[in-house]
Length: 336
Image (cartoon, rainbow, N blue to C red; front, side, top):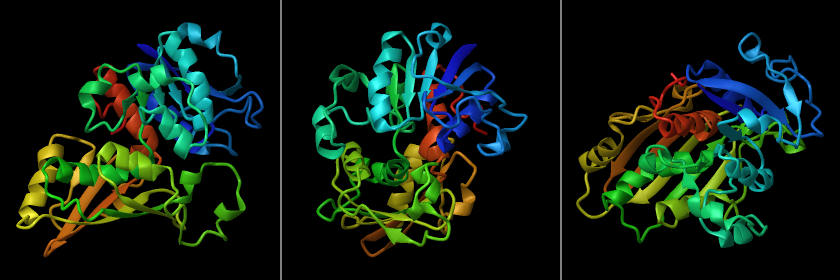
């Protein structure tokens, strides 16, 4: 058995991590922590005003601490469900003590310190760990994840955006003179649990935000090796991401070629489902750890549809999938 903790456990992704880890037959969930000044300190994670769906499943208290010197003595695995600035500061501490770290923030997703200066507005202090970090897009970095001490779990939008496009780029099917356009809409849980006027149920409509400025655009482009136009939207629903991706294929590329490429890379990947007819909807993935992909091709114009639960395949489930890969378990253990 390996011992694990979740830091930042009171958030939506943290609660999902706690649920999966408690179910895992090879993992002992040792502790759930929040920051020392958290208003949730001392509460059970299953409290009515936190995550009551965990009642009787995960009834651990939220430990308020910024000092991990006592906890770390018994820990093998650390999940960071924290903001990027927090992950940046504390991940090296756990790594230097020999823990394997799965970071759900953006703090180590791109192996270049200048990326963080440009897109996150701070100077990254840990280039040595950036160099060693493995990007946790599980279906594409399987072998690297098996050896990693630090796995940077991709963002929810980047996962839904990259999984449909990467096989087509790998098979050289796209006309790269036309930049793929990604229109993706996310449920409000993607903004986290902190109260915000713009995220109130009665205020949320459907609207675009972060056009040409969203941090996930350069993350997507970096790991695709292809520039994209990324248009994120906030939707009036709780969770899930629906991405509609428009691109152009090379002369002579057929629907059979698109299908063959997707199936070549995903037929043996249990958490990606390719639709041969029609295309998926959010209802097919909410509460499940899958990314579902469909497409339609007319002339040389290709529309890809990708759906996922932003809290699961877009966050906690992919982190657990990466953990399973890293420690040699079946990659769907505790997820299905």
